[in-house]
Length: 105
Image 1 (spheres, rainbow, N blue to C red):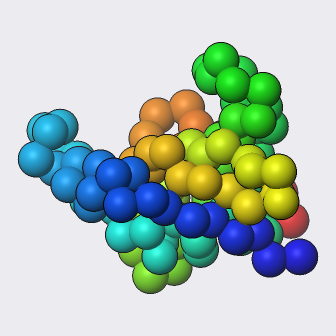
Image 2: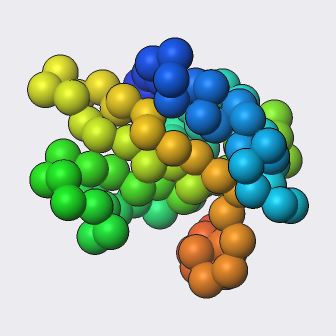
């Protein structure tokens, strides 16, 4: 099944302009997030333990177009569609965990 993610205009602008707010950050194209959430090796926390929302989702997955692992935070709507809230280039422990899991096959 293909996972669908949608971005409203405010959230789209937020991820497309990360480098203006955070040093050493990468601007994230919304299309890359679709690749990350559909990565067969993705890591999924649902609900996201770092969120107060019961319908929250955190996905760590690889985007071939971006050639990097991306963390995507979203809320799952009643129809099952993900509504993007934020996304960033994955670093640290989540990145190590992703590569460890992807190498297990």
